[in-house]
Length: 428
Image 1 (cartoon, rainbow, N blue to C red):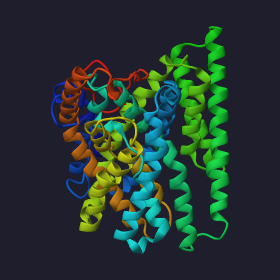
Image 2: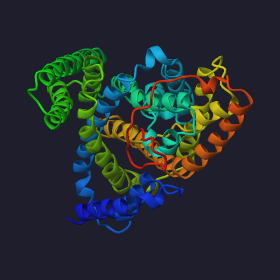
Image 3: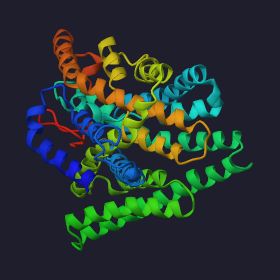
Image 4: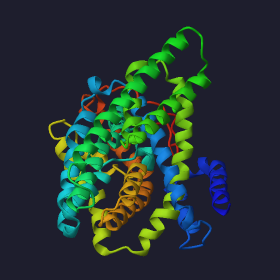
């Protein structure tokens, strides 16, 4: 019960002081992770190591809801046809991030093998805007840039999932942990079948909800419940065939966003709020069960890769992806820096930990160190960075109203994860 009391207490305290923390360098993720560290078995012992399995299950369920709501909400904004920047970041930047991360991982950790290095890079590829909400929330920042970061953070975790799944299967087969043909089986079950399950549930469920709403058969509350049920149903059914429940949940959200055509926007609010609470609690559990043990065994090489992951491995792909976009250097630097790692990387690493991969301990340690460093650095720099960039933009657009950053972009969906800025616009 001690752990439950800690979670309840920190949520209560944060709810009381959240408004006062907005203009400070202390983010919600920093606070929750810090409390988790202090409550860990390594520090105060309020959290018992025996609860790690329950913590992992909670994080997985939270990611299911986050994947579904992210995919559904971002899809509804029509980003692919209205703004090319997300296509650049996801179509060029994300694959290059994995390639560059793969190269550095293989050099620094040669004993993990080619596929182990690729797995580490893929686990750390997705970004999590929850760790730096002011960079998207601040309406002084051009909508084009806020929208691109919002879409990237909402979609790239789902796009990275197939790579994580296949690279893990390849690493296990290479190490002889599983028999030949394992990769082909994983591909069919985790990618093809799981995606098909998710797409079918999301599309059929959204169409049914639209019909029900048009005929007055359901209220907003139960439509929200139905969306949550779709996410969980996709996850469970895919898991039953030994597929990927996460891919199914993400595909269900993507399909629901397409089929609903924006008619379920109000119904998405309750799943979003549940995701908000889940993410907050997840960072407490991350600090207690994942970051604290990783800090016990930290090495300079692991710390070095963590720093590279947040800098070079992120900056270089973003710069290449945005080449020719006519964006100024401050904008490229802004987008490049604010690529924090969060919940998706934590859960992906836990999937690695539950496998029998010989190098799993090293991979998990590096991932947890990277996320922990991201919580600190991106949390401290988020408000300051958004303010500085917004100041640059206001002067630049005054000199030249036709700069690329001032171009039109879809409205950024109003969403929250861990904190809000003091601006009215709220987004993940």
